[in-house]
Length: 384
Image 1: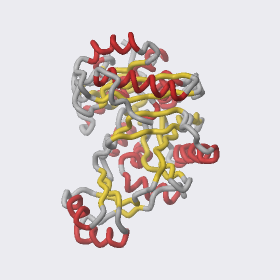
Image 2: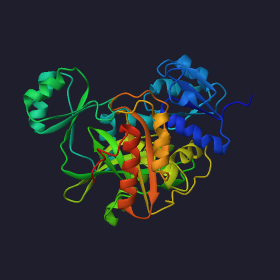
Image 3: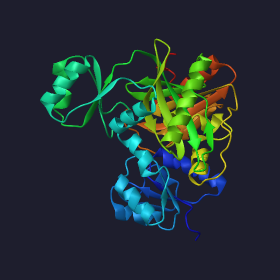
Image 4: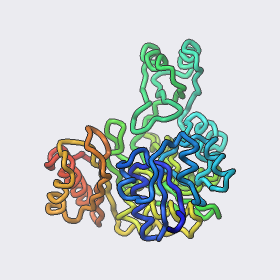
């Protein structure tokens, strides 16, 4: 049996969709999965069950694979350095990945680079000192855990000292940020290979509900060309300055007064790029594999003027496979992607994408397909 070309750490839907791209490229993946039936383990035959925080498990899955990449950013940096010392190349490397793992480190580094960010303050671990720091910083403020938060978890908006004390009492390492007055959220993605070649994707609009990305519109409608160019330039600069290899997503605020500010970084394929599977010449997953294996990158050119991706969350429908036939019959142009996950309320279990020439039609069609799949009817589609 041929040795793997690539070890992938983490068995979620991102690794599952990497496998989809790997098949066409002839890339063999070996996977470290959290369990025998997690999303990616269902479709990657060569997988091991283990813990990404245990070096021995990482070493076993890396095996003869020359390159290691990730479904998530949570592998301890010291373990990545140990793998590198043994001849495996982590992409992105631990020095870059730190800035996706730790929001405090990210904010400090981006500020040094002059990248536009919200005002922030690293808070003391002592509650009383942190209360004083927040008083100086000012309310309202957004408190975030420096590590581990996602999909709205580990984020609190506090308006006064009493609310702040409740969060501080949790004993987590926190950063305070200004509560940004923003029009909408954007995402700028780039793929970068070790040679320095960069491919820039269209800037998209990300629409949230309860802290979770609900839908993505590519490209972002009515985005001022100067802001689009600035967002793409910021993404390229961050990738180059931090030496990111693979896909980088830079999540942004478009402020009410016409600026862009960096909100978060993700150094892997990202939810805001799922539209590219069906809507671009080269998907984010294929370009991630190309980049980490140091292969020439593919064009990110959209196939149609508009693409809309809507996440499918756990809802009324429990049997997604049975409901799939209903959606395919009623909305045949919708592209359905299921993640092989058990349905739980609010859990991302799949997404649908629709592409076309008229934005209103594409939006309505994608929302209808997602709502049919999630809830069994078209009632409750997200308003624009």
